[in-house]
Image 1 (cartoon, rainbow, N blue to C red):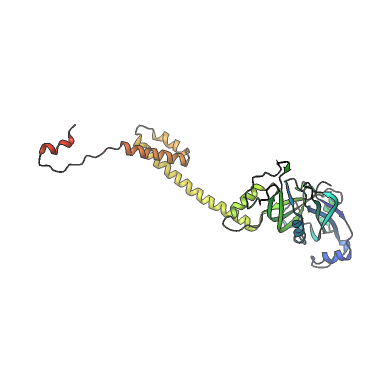
Image 2: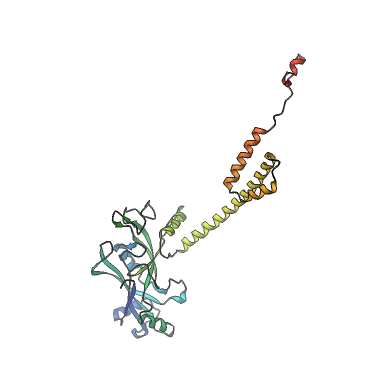
Length: 322
């Protein structure tokens, strides 16, 4: 298989039913449930040139326990279809990742209720139509494979997917912060089990800067936390307020420049210049303002003050001689 997938249905054993019933409100029989296994994610380099570390898979193993299975990463409750009740990390003997490491997979067991609503969905799984899956999680570290710098917090100029001295640059994801869900999708990011990466938990005065940087760095879909979404909305509203102040300042500046133009260039058609001033940038308006003010200082008439009284009448008027 070249993509993440649902493996197979199986008849749950008593130990499986005990785990399942820890998530249900009353005990279900094995016949009333559709139980299947799946490969969630692995440590190979994916289509976005990112990979999980083996340590990250071990951390995600605990975090995906009890998480729900949905369709196309939809957040609607109506689109919830399954729930994970068991997880484990498994080494695949004889298989290597793209960067030469031993291949490890995070695998899971999940269950669905056999009812009329899920009947068609289960049939599509059995027919191999609903097969590819993707997981959504949040990672705290994303290290460049070339320089070892964290792409989110440090300086790194290596572009994922490009070759440097014979080595392809990719990002190693580690420090799993949270796992959200797994989803049935058409094209997952990982070749063995697609992953929708999420922003890490960010706080502090540079939070918005970090979020924007992560949005630029991530080539896949992204799941935002409520806190991160609120931070984006807050930043957007602040920018709108500042933009309004900027527009008011530019409008006032344009009027001032037109007034200076009328004084410095009385023959200028002010209607024409006013129209030009409206489409100038703030930088251009400030440049015109500076030029007009400088011109006004040079060409302004100097007042002749009455000189002090002198005893000699001829000397008293000497200041006015040409």
